[in-house]
Amino acid sequence: MTPGRPILPGADKLRRPLGTHASAKGASDEGNERKAMSTLFTRIIEGELPGRFVWKDDDVVAFLSIGPLAEGHTLVVPREEVDRWTDASPELWGRLTAVAQTIGAAQVEAFGAARAGLIIAGFEINHLHLHVWPSNSEAEYDFKRAQHNPDPAVLDAAAEKIREALRAAGHGDHVPAG
Image (tube, rainbow, N blue to C red):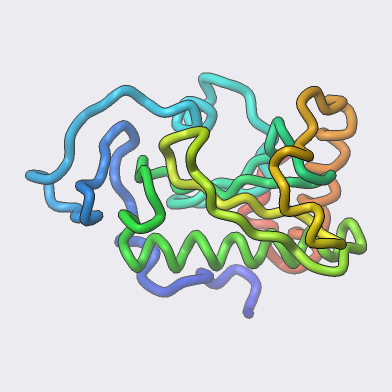
C-alpha cells in the first residue's frame, strides 16, 4: 500500500451525518434515515466524552477499549451510527475491515504479538464496532477476561505504541496527536 493513498477506493461515498441511522438494510437515502439519540461511541467521536484515539479519518475512527482483553485492545468504529455489521453498506464494511487490518498489523508490530485478534460482538453498545487486539493465544478471545479498571498510564502508553507503529507504516495522515 502506498502511504497517503486511501485504503479503499470510493471511501468518499461512505459519509452520513452523525446522529442519523441507516435502515435495517443499510440504505442511505434520506427517506430511510431517522434522527436519534447519539450512541456512546458517537459522543466519544464528537469529543463529548474522552477517548484514546489512534486513528481518525472521514469515515472511521479507532480508539482504545476501556475494558481491554489485552494491552492495546482497540475499537474500530464507523462515524456513521450503524447498529449491526449486517446493516453496514458493503463500502463501509470494506473500509472498517481495511482499517481494522491496518490497526492489527500495527499492534502485532508494536507489541510483538503472534497475531491480531478480531471480534465483532456489538451487544454492549448499539453502534457497530470491531474489537482488534494483539493476541498470542485463543484464550484471549474471552470477554470474561477483560480488565475492568485498567491503569490509565498503561492505556496511554499502549495508544502511543500503536500510533508510533502506524506512523512508521506510513499512515501518519490518519494518526491523531496523543
